[in-house]
Amino acid sequence: MPSNKMWWSYVVDALTTSAEKNPVAILVFVLGICIGIWKYIQVVPNHPNLKSRNVSQEEYPPIEALQDFDWETTEPPKFRPFKPKYHLTMALSNLDPSDLIQMDKTYKDRLAIRSSLLQKHPDVVIGINNKTDPRIYAAIRELYLFVVGTYLPTRYPRMFRLTSQPSGTTILESLVTGAKIPLDLDESDAASRTGRKELEILGTLVDEEFLILLPEPSSSPNITTATNSEEPAKYVLEAYTTFFPSGFDTRKKLGLRLASIHTPVPGYKEKLERSMDRFFARVEVGQFVQRVNWSVTTDSELFAAFGGVHGAEGEGEKALRLGELDVDSTLLRCERQTLHRLPQSRGVVFAFHTYTYPIRMIKDEGLGEDLTAAIDGLKEGNVPGMHWYKRGPVWGEAVKEFLRS
Image (tube, rainbow, N blue to C red; front, side, top):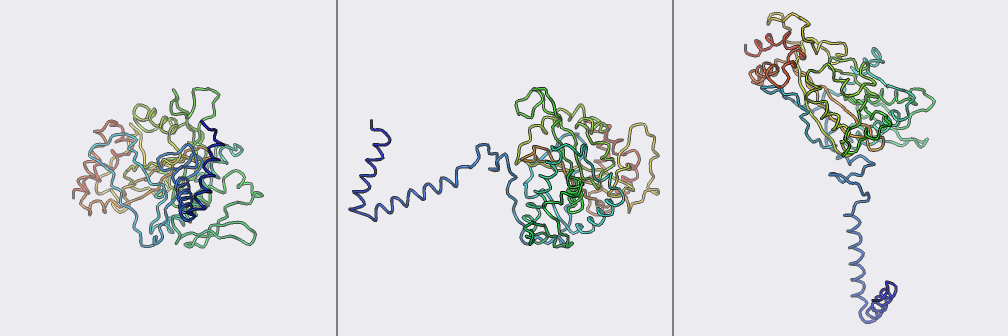
């Protein structure tokens, strides 16, 4: 059999002879080869480790633009996640990466609240576990650059745009507030070398809470993020920007593993701990998930870091009567929670957006009986302790009476 060199020699000789007899045919033949190569390049991925969205393990997936989106006329989504029986499960669903951060008509008012909270409670709404840990700083920077430099100007071009400065730097300009946010912060500012400045900007630029978790450093070969590991890596909360916490002080969660973070949640250890640890260790780059939770609050603001949302068994709080219930300040409070992995630092970002709805709205929608059943169902699911954890003994009977009135 002839060698490759000899074979190509035969091909070239044949093409040369044919070209002399029929040059048009040869031109068509060569053009066809070029088109075939071009199509092959478009189809074959340029990275060997691709996932379901054709995203490499080193980059975020592409974001789809909402060219005509008008935030001022967009109503907040109406989440009604309550069910007749409350079962404690992960309850995750897939999320389109383009829907990671949602905007609506409350955006500007919410930003004003956030700016005020940053002034009043700077060490409550922002936290970094170790300001000298380069892993934490890298994860914060990665999230910051994606949100500020890619996601916002791509997803919402009528709200944000990137502009180049005469100095050669690039900034994000908010067309809503007029704010100008640099992608690269001044390294002479100590806060920008720790990631705090980036977290402050994220917390006052979007109405979203971000918590960054990283795998716990370990020398044990069994503690790994590999999908076939016997024991998954334990993830630790290393940094956050949380302006609207629902009944918890995030400062007290810094440096804790997932299991310790969820210690107050009844049934977590038995029902969710193992599944959550495995999911955090195995979630892939390009995989985005979401869930929605619910609770009822009677006098809590969006910023509820110091209580008023959760209870403890045996606390003995007095049950409210309907006449004692301030209906106008009683709200259905929902969190749209999302989770994804940072491609470069491999950290996991847990984020949530808080939505509140007057309890009167639920009644006016004709969903009073549904919510009433769900309140009773807190005691009838797989974790009956969820009833007292959500302070059901305090507000439950009064809210049910109002919904049925």
